[in-house]
Length: 136
Image 1 (spheres, rainbow, N blue to C red):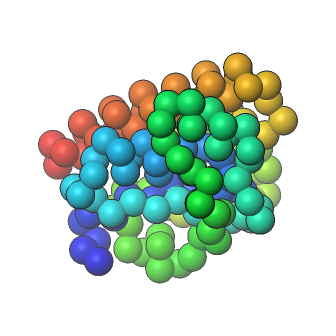
Image 2: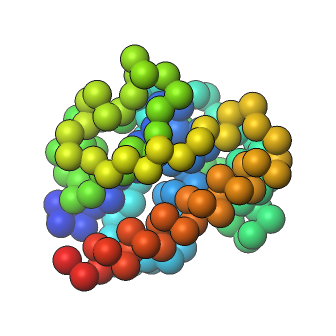
């Protein structure tokens, strides 16, 4: 893959925020960049409320699964975005230099209304990011 085209969204569990960001990026920047999300301590499955709120807006995450952040993902990314940390010891920013840090709340154990707000915040950030990197 071309280094100048890879975008990486990272968080700890890769079960919510980074998965939503990856999905929005794929939807709004389709074909322009390669995008992936990963976590430092990925869970076995996505947060079901995240899957539900994304389904509400026509994005199906039911086949997605959390992925472990690898050195090659980091080395081959043009832009890396840290979604925010709930666990400071596993925070991707400790392992990944030169990242954008969005500091978005973790949807874990949040109400569906709170997860909808997080989803909408991520969508807004992704759209801004796409505009920013299209200019570069």
